[in-house]
Length: 354
Image (cartoon, rainbow, N blue to C red; front, side):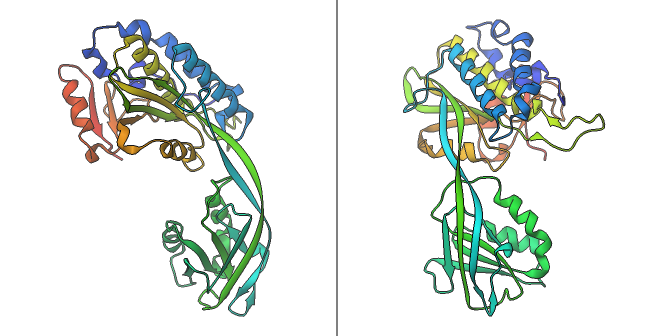
């Protein structure tokens, strides 16, 4: 088991709570309780909480039970704490067509979008073609291409065939359904003006769920503050020198989820939040941030006052104890507000140094 010992001060981003005296925080958040949650989430029987495995389902059940014990409410529109959604794995059955004068071979085609049928040609409306020739920098041109949201055919010179595995990894194990059609073709004629690609894929639906609990606000229930983190991890990988191939994900991000559950317990006991607080544990972060993407689409951004995403907080920052850094510190005044509230304490927030 790969396990990073969680430090109580590193866990919580909660130095600012020392200004609140209505509850004794040590009775609510303590080493024993933090360790209990952390150790369950990163135990071997959670199988590294890899997406689409029984282990991640077990983790979702545990987080749901913890939210129920705290007394959180389900998110509006949900009957429980699971916010379910579907992704789709696509297997290419057959690809046909023509690039210039060259017939397409199925083995040279990779569909980047999970559509049952993809049909694109040089006469397609609202479609573009990206050409990566032998003289191009493959990684630069490919990254530029996949950042586009158009229907797209990406024609890649056959000399880059060694990158097929990389393109497949980008495609991932599953994706959201989309109306967009994007397909990669490795060809000896990437600069050909005429192209036509027809592909058929078999789709398999894969169900996932975020876990979300809500503490309704007293006077501003339609304004939201969100505490979030991801509960999935990578499962099994390359064995270490002891032959252990299970990546338990204690710090990434069982630590963050432990922090969220501890915060939920604290604010529930405090019982004075004017705004609604949402506690969200996201899935499928490690394969592309799909859980957080789905969650964000269910809310009106104008209703969200602030969001704290807790990531890998189980180890000390570069400044040592009583410190943490904020990615995006320079984009808002949140860090300034937090540090002002921390005046007189040992705790301080810093901009992300990385």
